[in-house]
Length: 471
Ligand code: FAD
Image (cartoon, rainbow, N blue to C red):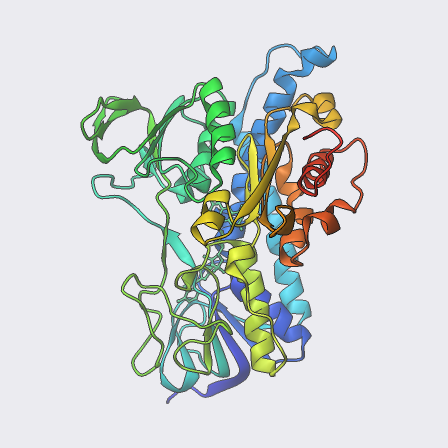
């Protein structure tokens, strides 16, 4: 006998940040929502991404703090590391958040199905395996939020011992004493920074001419200088061709260069969409040549009753908070409410390496490429009293504004930060860029003293024509 098709206002495939945000927001608006997840709600971000990675970076931060404790007159003895404790703590943090999220979804009466789902014609979603295999759910609207998985590289078979992606790396109980991190983007730099701060010897191998491509060049310089000082070997503009394992280590082959011999290779070469098997026949959804789903600014796919959000969407940043924002856009569109599309040029970016990086809006180079005449000001953290107090003075705040006809700074186009706790300071810059504030308007607002955020305030004052410390 055929299964009865269950009817919902919205059926969501994938319970990561995009999918669970859509479920919570839709249910809060009174929609009858089903969420289908093949693994655990929370997705990559909670189980294999943002949260575990930041927990390990915090472990590295604690170790750094202890190592510098003597500067404050505090004796600690030799620092020892039992990484399995950090791994257990990470799992505990993840479990608590997972329980909290599951409880929230239940509280909002979201129907959760377990298994792998496929969208067929007429918005019918079939669960093809897992605990709820055989269930069929029809949504007046369907949201595709199946996310992404790590990319791999030819010549590097992932075995979980010598060659790891972020998935395996975040499950390690002991840390390697040496590693080659292939890919110097946000994830690669976070892993390299963490490993180095935990005592490993690290080489970053990056194919592009620089690490952190897409970040403002000044910010990249801060990170590069710090990495160099700490002994991280950054090799940019190189092509890796494969590796040859030897007893307990492996030699990574670099085209035209010397091998890099390390304990493990960590692949951080981007993420591909998890779209295989997601779409049956006749869905009307367009998929691009790389497997990403094409959606418009309302997050609608080529089928007006099917939406896509999160990492699976073509040509959008793969960030958890972008998935949250897209979820809200999709649900509001479904509700027929007015909606402000996500402005992808002005989303906040945060990289939790040591030093941290945070930015929003155009880099100086991108602003010039777009034809803007710009005024640029920067202020290093060295002169900031709080930075001196905490003993972390590396870094800079750089702000780019449009130059007015009279040469003064007008609308703020970009805010770029590298240094202590900048990921927690970006909020003010985010508002300034997205509220399209001018330099004077933002500079008139007060920053508390002594605080790291005074460097942002001081840069704004300088941009508006008269800085207290910066010319
Ligand atoms: P995902 O989180 O990938 O979730 C998709 C879910 O769908 C998964 O749970 C999957 O099991 C499920 N699924 C897939 N296919 C099906 C199917 N057919 N049926 C049922 N279920 C299915 N972003 C940040 O903003 N900040 C950070 O600091 C940050 N750090 C990161 C660090 C690392 C190491 C990594 C790997 C990523 C990081 N990210 C970070 C990126 C962030 O994790 C992703 O952007 C985010 O998780 C994407 O959310 P999503 O909902 O689109 O997809």
